[in-house]
Length: 87
Image 1 (cartoon, rainbow, N blue to C red):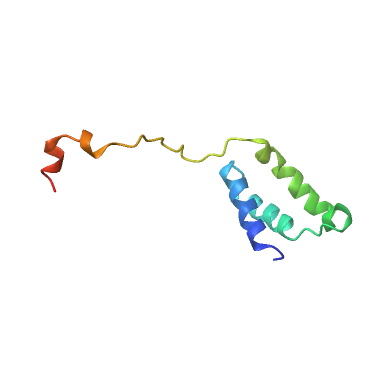
Image 2 (cartoon, rainbow, N blue to C red):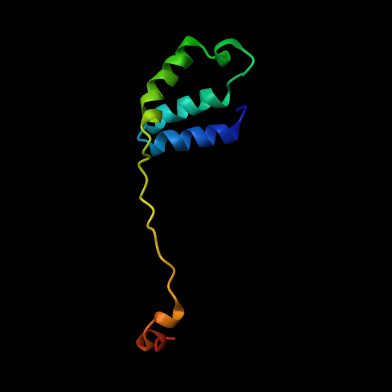
């Protein structure tokens, strides 16, 4: 693999957006082995078909991840005395 970090990032982005793992792995491998100085990045027609098939997943801007919970800082002074009895 030419660029492992790019492979990992592409795989994570695709699977987070609902792309099937086997298809995401194929596409990530293609992207990680791209040759920027070659025509079509050195991709074969078969490679390009794989990339085209994952394109809709990349257009899905919302990753299918568990939403992050926003929390507010709590002042220790605001905690009731009953809380501190456990320590």
